[in-house]
Each structure stands twice: as structure tokens, then as C-alpha cells.
Image 1 (cartoon, rainbow, N blue to C red):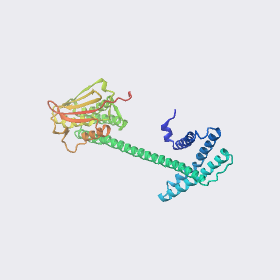
Image 2 (image 1 turned 180 degrees about the vertical axis):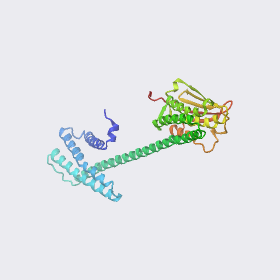
Image 3 (image 1 turned 90 degrees about the vertical axis):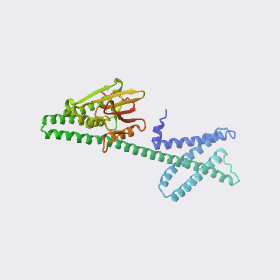
Image 4 (image 1 turned 30 degrees about the vertical axis):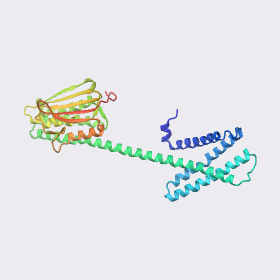
Length: 359
């Protein structure tokens, strides 16, 4: 079975396949067209010789045209015209020899224009060969340019995603190092040391994950648990976290650390503002072909406009919005709303995808 993809990718193989197939097709069509003219084997032999002569003579055109395509337009057109006419003339001579010497056994026509007509027919065939050659070459160039543009677009898209993903680390580090600095200032060295240890574990985990690839939700939860251990060093019993993850969602694929900025926001703007602390709830459910993720808190809440927070200079939530747009285009939703009775609720809907199980 022919592997068409490999055939079209290998330009050398593609040329010889089309070149040989084209001339074989010429022989078949020519024979069928003159079937009623003569059915003897000698006529078939002459047609085969003519096709072989055309096959051989047009090979040099490939290399001439390859050179001509690099020249200025006028030079290229002149080269093509002269080369095509010369090859057509040579082919016409060979066809005349085959026809008059082999098929007609040495008989010569007295009418001169029969030779001219044969040259015109040969030139038409060579021009058709040339047109197909340049047509296929231009098609290949367009395909290559399209592939290059697609590759460049993909690389830019991946770079954008990496930038968005890695942007979280400095943002998160800034907040965490500030907290460690505060602990050191108040001489709470034991707590600061525990926080540095958990920070190291979290960063090692996050750097091991490819920012482009999606990860199973159960791995995202592991990363969040590492992060929450860091925050629990600061808040102790003031931070209460509840998990409600459906079993069928644990292997669903999600962008890495997609929930961490939401939880970080909840801690910063809700838990830290409440003297007795507060609660963060994390829920994951499947709904049809979608995965529904929800993070909510019972804090003092905030002003919301058009499903988004009105806070200025925020990094985390706009970052999530951009990542979701880059990964899922319009096939997602990201909505911030008021939680009941108090607090903020963030809902994310993305396509339910399951990859290979990762132990």
C-alpha cells in the first residue's frame, strides 16, 4: 500500500513517480486514441519508444528549470521558452525517426508541413510537462510556507503559554518570600524554616511539569496540597480547606497550576482579612462533555463586574483567563460570582479530556 504522506514529503521520489507515471499515461492515452488506426504490435512498440524518448529528454528540463527559477523573471521566461522548444524539437526528430524508419520502413513524406506539425505537437506536450512541473513546484512552495507559518504560529503559541505559566512562579514567590521575611523579622525562625522547606518541595514539583502539557487533575491536586501546606504554616487553624472531587474527574486533563492563583487570591483577599480565618472549598464535577471546576471562599467578598473582579493590577486571574483562551479558544468559560452567604466563587468550565494514566 502506497504511503502518500511519505511520497509527497520526499520530493525526489515524488518527481520520479509523477514523471514516470505521466509519460506512461501519455503512452496509454496515445495508444487508445489511435486504437482504430493500427492494432499491430509494431505500432505499440513505436508509441513506447516515443514515450521513452519523451521521458529521457524532459529529465534535463528539471535541472534547467530549477536553475531558471532563481533568475530574474525575464531571464527565467527566456530560458524556459528556449529549453522547451529545443527539447520539443529533439523529441520531434526522434518521433519522426521512429515513425518513418520503424513503422513506415523508410518511406518519406513529400509534404514538408508534416514535419512542422509533429514539432508543434511535441512542443505542446513539453509545454504541458513544464506547466505541470511549475504548478507542482509552486504548490509545494505554498505548502512549505503554510507549514512554516503554522510552525511559527505554534512556537509563538507555546512561548506565550510558557510565559503565562512561568509568570505565576515570580508572582507566587514574591508573596511567599514576603511572608518568610515577615516570619524572620518577628524571629519565628522555626515557622520560617518549615515554610522554606515546603516552598522548595512545591517549586521542585512545579518545575518538573511541562508548562505546555496538560496534567491529570489528581496531579494538580497534589500541587495544590503542597502549596496549601506552605500557607498553613502561616495561617495554621485559620485556614480550612475542603475538597469535593468526583472520582471520574481525577484523571481529567487540566492546565498545570490553573487553580493555584485562584486559591492564592482567596487566601490573600479573604482568609487573611478574617481574624478567625475562613474556609476554601474546591469542587470538581463532570457535566456532559465538560469538566466543571469551582473554588469558593467565605470571605468578605469583592466588587464584581461582568463576571470578573474589579481589582486593579491583578496578575493571577487575568493570567488564567489568557491561558484558557490560548488553550481552548471559545470552548471554555471563566466566571467569578458572589458566593452565598458571603465570599467569592470562581467557576471554570473546560472540555473533559482524559489522557494516558500517569502513575
